[in-house]
Amino acid sequence: MGTMSFTNGRGKLVTREVNWTVDLKSHEDDPGFALLVIAANGHLSVADLRRLLKTECIERSTGWIQRRRWLFQEPGTANSPGKPNADGKDEAATEIMLENLKLSLRQLVRLLAEKGINRSRDWVRRNRC
Image 1: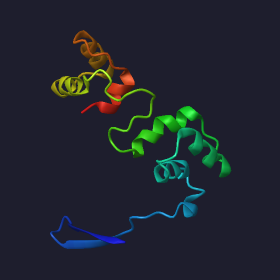
Image 2: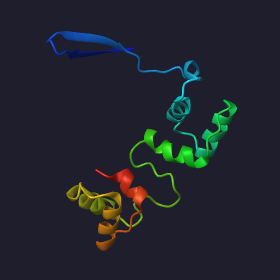
Image 3: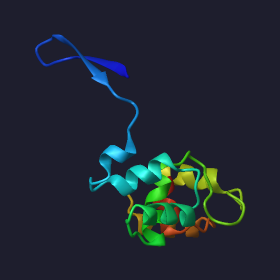
Image 4: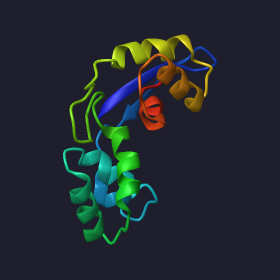
């Protein structure tokens, strides 16, 4: 438990209690239960997460878990085989994306390719500034 304080629209200081922990079992019937399980078990592989969800009678595809798992991971976590930043151009790609914030994903991928930095649309989406 913790507290949160803020000033409301009338200038009055308001304090609320905040619960920083969640009992997963109390949310079994909620629509977001699968996401809570993924968030609480970020150390497990996609296959292990799928098995865990199956024990709770929740069917999710491997792709569904992969697309949502990154939401709860530390920045820089590599989920794919190979070395992260293998070509050493991640910083340059990030700088180019910072300079072109209004471009679409497809346009950013093309721009990076023109500069000799090959990145997928998914990579650009995840690393967009």
